[in-house]
Image (spheres, rainbow, N blue to C red):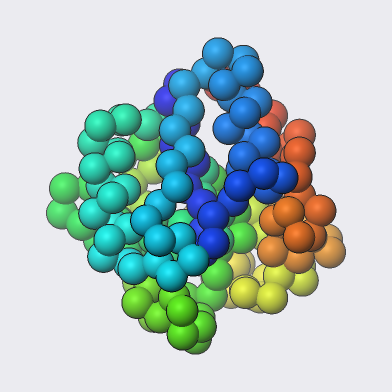
Length: 177
């Protein structure tokens, strides 16, 4: 299995759970790519699309793990004509499709593509995420008929809300390694 981990706005360096996941995969002799996307604090949708398309072509992942803005990026990538399909996609803490944050405005409003280009998809959100409501997450999940897990009081499911080492996501991602 080849796992591509895509961070959101500002990156996901340690102690964020994505950094911990990348380390855990590597420690278990898995193949992982956890790139720092261009100018992560002031991202450009078009630059990120170009960068990740090149990464996907070169790395050819089976599994993609997105957090936050990376989910929105994935939606935009799915609108590209030459987008390849992965085995598994994990969507953790996607922001609202209508987010109105000036620094990341090039990503919004975001499309809901017809095809998520993944054979198996799972969405995980928190019931108190400041960037999306459970209702909107449920609508996204039902649109694609994918499982949705809602975690209580987990905020944006990041290091700031206590999600450093996160064994549950490690198990989900690595169970098919």
